[in-house]
Length: 547
Image (cartoon, rainbow, N blue to C red):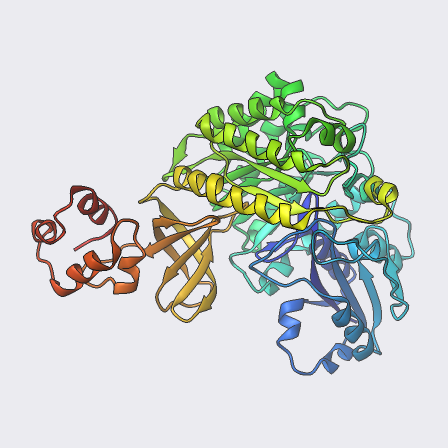
């Protein structure tokens, strides 16, 4: 028996599965198939697109598509599957037992600011609206699964093999499930997490550590606690929603022991209001995270809006000042730098088009972002998104999926934030001369390379040269954009750096770049100073170049 898993990518409120991320969904399904000795292959939709003829799909007995976005996003590592491609697969693959699973079962959309349409996959034998690993296990075994986490524990030893089939391997980020469901008593109006998964339930520490151990043996070195809606509430469940600092300590220490040479250990989501309601315990958890994590980690705050009316109608929260206090605490604990990069910084999600929003909402949001900047606090990133109206959410039911959003005002606000907030923030988070280690080339356009470190919300790095895709490089930051930084591969001699690279350096300009090129080669730094004649520029060049 043979099975093929086609990863069409998922993006949910507490889960990411677009490369370089590999979500638990395909891993667990792969593990189930292998548990039953089914010869299993794995392809991303991008890998499938590269094949001219899709008739090979008929070589398999089972074909599973996993797909669906329930939050809006933009992706460098892959393009999510669309309905045309799903239909094409269903037509080309007429022999396998065809299955489809993921958020796409509940609704389909690829963009924010749109109404997700209801889907109908009549050409599939199994349309899986529940957990696909549970469904497939029951299908193959004829037995009922009473406890999903016990099933995951059973199939974990068989799941790691999928890693080597991932196109980014060994630079694959393993998204780890800590818990699922929402820890809030009243769900946010727009969120699919409680709709899909109900109230929060946490996974056992020993099970997570065991999964990391098997993934590590399979070659995994990059891990993220991304499958959790609020890392501060890990260890709790709907009967007890208080923080469990000792369990978080046990989790992080256990993972570091199971994967001693890991390269990345990051997390994702946290609730700033929860942090302040349980301040003492949350501070202990933050201290644990900073003790064990790797640099460049981000704690994503789902703020969505600083407008009190919008907060009350959509999040059952009232006070935006709480967010400022939470940002300050994370800065104090996580702001220390290792290898030039902060260990842990907060990120902010803003969502426009929510219930109760007015034109004044945009100015309120901007005022709070300016306040954060003026206070000297650091944000790793600010996500500005348009709401996706997803069937089943309170937002969808109240609006019938109709989104009232002033597109011009949205674009003006976003551009204002990028120019006046993001740009200044990036210069503080990644100052001139910061060395970013192991930046992976993901795309090339001519001699321009677009790369990122493997991590949570890694900064986009643009640099010149002829480098191969997936080539790991050390890059020194030499300039800043609104959402990216410009870099130069390090180390590099000032005697070999190109003219285009020179003019990309902040403060150099065409005239100085030409002087440097015309007076090369330099035998010592004194000669360079004679040509430059500027202390600041000279210090910058000495910081980023060798002779």
